[in-house]
Image 1: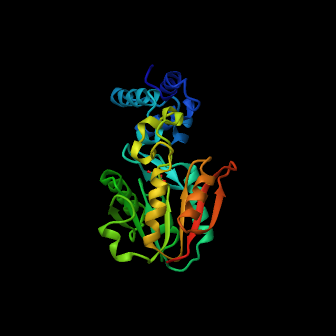
Image 2: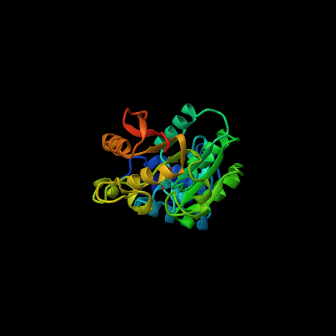
Image 3: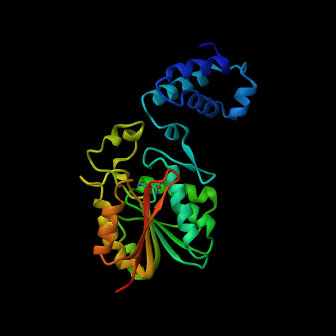
Length: 284
Ligand code: GLN
């Protein structure tokens, strides 16, 4: 390649030809290394790029060609219109999870309530809720210290100062011992993929933290535990709401009713898949 934006993009697009988004990914990566907008690249195709920058670009393109998610290479990802830092310690936030947050906001009253985001990862759920509902008291829990560091940085950068970050395995532990039976809302995008699911081999998924994706041989191990633990934390008529696999709604409804929850409702994503469930804890 010679050293213009135009030829760098043509070269990168060829390198990435196996990806459906080859052109867009090339543009994103080049804009990133140049510190310019995508509009700039389109307007100035003859802009000359120095050799060091070209080397960095070539390395990123090679990583992307090897399957690394674009979000990890750029270091951030848009979620509900805001930029969140992400890295290999956090799941890449999915658009479905934006719909989960919208669903929670739609059914929750505006009054101050106590909410826990379990498995916060990059913090997208906790931070988005905190920014939409300034009067909520929000705890973001994750077992991974490395993920929590990313979430905390996101909260700071985006001005969600009130969120409390807690390193804990699951809902129950020292940090939550003083709030038993007083949580109004537990929300989560838990790991829900079965160990041998072929989806784990697709796209960049194998670069994402396994802990954030996989939950036992039926994908329900984490959800079972969360359903059980949430009973100790939720107040009377408190809500548990979470995302799950497109084919898990039925089994999840059964396990929620068996655990004593009521009013189980499923929510659909934009493509009509039932991937959200909400249940009410009657207390007791
Ligand atoms: N809560 C984060 C998200 O929705 C991380 C979820 C996870 O790691 N399973 O992206």
